[in-house]
Amino acid sequence: MHELAVTKSILQLVLEQAEQNKAREVVKISLVIGEMRNLEEEWIQRYFDYISKGTIAETAKITVRKVPVLFQCQQCGATFHADVHVEEKIVCPKCNGFEYDLTAGRELLIESVEIK
Ligand SMILES: [Zn+2]
Image 1 (spheres, rainbow, N blue to C red):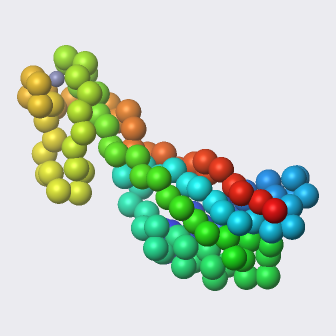
Image 2 (tube, rainbow, N blue to C red):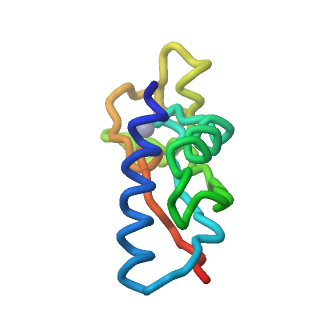
Image 3 (cartoon, rainbow, N blue to C red):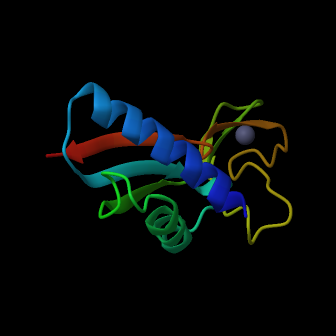
């Protein structure tokens, strides 16, 4: 159900933008989604098709660019990637430190909207 709430807000934003630009049809929506978000492209499209019925975005195709998770070590400053769904304990590969900040991977943006 997580995807449904997100998809609703995406549709709302897209329709607002389309209206401002006096669009007749929304053709394509490009999204940027961080790995941490746990959002499946397939489900976003499915929900979108369902909730956009009767709007000018009902035939829009959604594309998703995934952003990998990136951490920055607080001790040595190294930036590294870790698969948060596989690795239980994440440590810095350079200094084995375990204090770090998440610098990428939580994105949820509409990159572009193609309209007619
Ligand atoms: Zn480190």
